[in-house]
Length: 184
Length: 418
Image 1 (cartoon, rainbow over the protein chains, first blue to last red):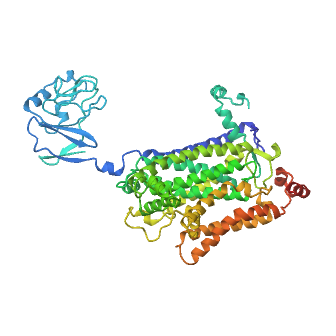
Image 2 (image 1 turned 90 degrees about the vertical axis):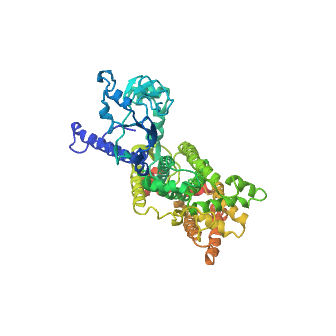
């Protein structure tokens, strides 16, 4: 295609920029249009309304004996709820912050020290740590142990040893009553 | 076509090894195109864009659709209510099918009027008919997926067409169903095939384009391009024309999606499929109605099926039925009349296909069906013998630039015809 550009009457070379502006503006509009079309096609992969509607659950914790733990499913992930013993609470509270990779006091991680609620997904690469059942390996800090790559968590679910960078995540939750917590 | 036409050194480096930029430049930029194309030549690119829209929205819909008889209907309703923008994407896909057929039908009638099927474009035409067949199969299977009443009974009726085949018909139908009725295996395979076939269409479209670019586009006066003076580069002349046409098309398409998305659908398809009860009045989607009318016009099971498939099959041999060397209908006074009669006949078949199969509608369907085949099998071959065409212009460029050049060509054409 010939690249000759005819200049309009009275237009000099230095004003060709005006045409460039029109070209750039056209491409910009086309780009905005393309992005606007692409967005719904991409955004449909985000959680749908019915998926988001399942985002909170109620859990009855009155049946959990001291020393026992249950695992419930919340947003497709396991949530650990542990009714901790006095020993576990004391040891969790007495840890020196300097020993922690992701420093957090036990108080920051619980609402009621007796019940530890956290997402049971290792912060390394997403496996579910052991330690919920009696007989499970609980790791060197008497909490949880991730069998995938060897991360050790203490009785407050904090990372103590191994490749995981962060403590086990505490989900948003509140006590709906003494017996029921609402997660999410 | 030397590589140094690109200023960007990276482009030059790649193009030397993989001449993709030269190819695109040759086929989309400098590609010489007859300078007299009218807006009917927009519909090829519109069809291509429609195909892209259908594939893009279809892949996205498949992410939320469940091909199971117990979940299909609900998964479509979930797309409509819960999936982000799902209602928009589904309405685009649903109406996109109709708009795709509108565009393709106009594209076909353009080819019929301007003789675009004639030598040396016979294979181009045949590939186009093949695309139409694939589109029909794809559209039919897509309509089954929402698993509403029309989906189910459409699937039942269309698959039963094959039972008309002597001896092996029933076995073929059982094979299509994967059981003894339209059921979960049928739905599963239709989903798989509905996903596959658009990509087959893409393959045939590529062949269609290769065949097109061999001799270039036909044009409204139907005479061959005689040199560079008859053509303009595709870009920017036809890119801009195609984009303008596209903007009109998309405006109409958007109007349908946002203001009457269910106009071309059927309300019964929002009732979940019920194998125990057929809806009182079952009709296929509008784009199948002419063929449906032909099916019902023949009072014999096998005959009706053959007539329906024959209505498409006859298009494959059209280049050898119309022997007139004049391509464009503009210069064929008799053909022009019969062309418009044929258009009316096709529209009438479409109307009759949507009416109940009783009384006057049956009679009219038979007349219209007979005319359809008469047009191809008798009228077109006959016209190419008895018709005296009008004088053709001497060249494409003269026809564009003014009438003075039109004279004098008359005698030359008559020579050519005989």
